[in-house]
Structures are given as structure tokens and as C-alpha cells.
Image 1 (spheres, helix red, strand yellow):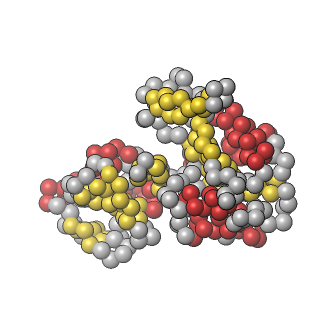
Image 2: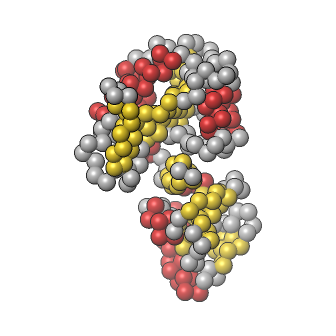
Image 3: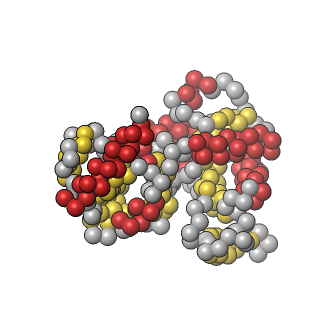
Length: 281
């Protein structure tokens, strides 16, 4: 029997945010209250440690940081690695993961490797938690963001928060999408192109996967407006970084696939590509 599956909690700093809907947890009455936060992108954090007291303490410190920084957080707690891994396999993703190394049921190193190597998720920032400092070589392949030594202090946690914020600001843009109610994200440089098929969006990734979700081209263009994406037809939007060769009437992708540029868009596409090439010089 699972010791504990997971528990979800949202920060309570949404009072002054318009057009938002989230789940807030009322401790006194032990129930969840729905608030409007639909247009808001939340920071999703998971904490996985077999020490339940530490999990709750770390969660409270993070929620307090979120309140101070005016950031809406969604936190989820897991008390063993196996439960976390089963949850991730269902398509759930996190922006930041605090992961204990020493756990009986699938340790943190195994979970981290699975996230990187099986799910192919390089976007999740992993912070390992341990009472020892002797795991450097084991953690190297997982590419963690940082390492927390127990006991966790507020000052140290604030340093990690600030590091995450700096990396997020300096990092590339992220594309967010929803599948069966689950919010997901993928870095722009891992997107090769989008193709619209009726109401479905087919997102072709650089590692050969095709992610399907419902949406419209107008929504995709709005989400990627600050990136370098080129619309070559009514139904196709290509990442400039994935254009291996430009031939005027078609483009070649790194996979060798050739996509045609419709006649009505060839001039505009040529101007865009020339502009991006100048930026790279």
C-alpha cells in the first residue's frame, strides 16, 4: 500500500490578481475554494521526501516566499520517489522539483535520471535534498540546479529561489500547453514546428516526438510572439532555429524533412529569415 500519494496546495496571494482562477486551501475549514485565475501562469513546485515533517515545513517556507514575491505557486507533496515517478509518467510536469536523495522506494537519483533520460525533460529545475555532501559524481548526469543540505534554512531556500528566478529570466522562452487538464511546458529550442490539423495542434519536437493537444494557430502565434517562429502556411509555424536550409519556396529541417512555403507567404518568410540571419551575425 502506498504510504501517501500526493497532496496539492496553492498559494493564497491571488486577491489582487484579475481574471484568475485557482484552488486555495482553507486550513481552518479544511476545504478548497475556487478563485478566478485562468489567465495566470502559476509556478508549479513539487517536493518529494520521505520525511513528511520536512515536506510540510519546506512547503510553508516556499508559499511564504511566493506571497512576498507576489508569485502564485502550486505545490504538490510526494513522500516517496515511486509515487512521484508514476505521477510524472501521466504527463504532469513541474517548474521546480525539490527531491530527496535517500528514499527507500525509488531514490532521488533514479527519479532524476528518469526525468532526464526517459521523459526527456530538461526544463524542470531539480534541487536535491540530503543530509550528506558526498553525492557530487552521482548527481552530475542529472544536471541539478542546486543542492540542499538538511536542515533546510529560510536563508538557503531564499538563495535557491533567487537562483531559479535568475535562470528563468536569462533562460529561453517557454511554450505552455494543456493536455487533458494538465498544464505542461516545453522550451522553445526543443520545438521544431507546429502543425494545425482541424482543432488539434501537432507539436514536433527536436527529439522526434509529436505532442498532440487542442488549440488554434492564433493561440500558438500569440504564445510564441516574442520568439523566432516563421509561419510558412495557414497550418504550419516553424522554429527558425530548426531551419537547416531555406530554398525560397521550401525549407529543410534537421531531420531531412522538407516543408513547402505557400506562395502567398514566401515574400514575408524571406524577409523574416533574412532579418533573423542578420541578428545572428
